[in-house]
Image 1 (cartoon, rainbow, N blue to C red):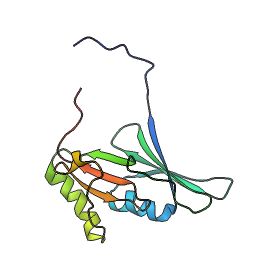
Image 2 (cartoon, helix red, strand yellow):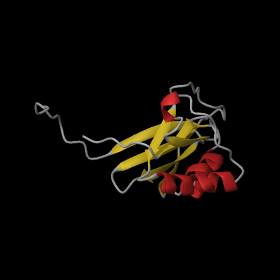
Image 3 (cartoon, one colour):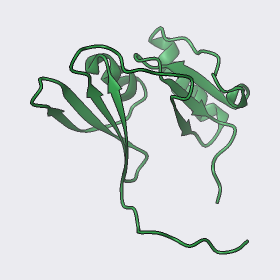
Image 4 (cartoon, rainbow, N blue to C red):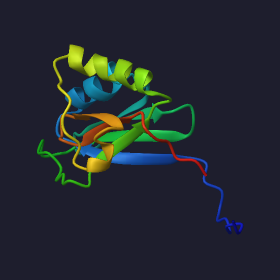
Length: 137
């Protein structure tokens, strides 16, 4: 395989999602999924947000509450995939959602049908808890 040319070194990545209700989103991602909140903030337009750490690296999920309190537009392409080391670990993570009364849903992308457990977050973004594949480069 030919060597790829590399660009500038990236040291952090942040995925930003606009949410309707920050409290509900923090319950979903921090309390149920277990992502640590590393920073909370209040914007000048009376909206707030939080940054949660993904993995043990410089990858973050930023949740920003919309000023209007309306949900951001979400379509079938909106999903967050988290890869677990195996099916048992993914299903242990899924159990926390089920115990909180959140049922799994069918994945919008059929690829995940037998490779993941999928839930809708409070803003209808699919959270895909993958156990069937990881990226290997």
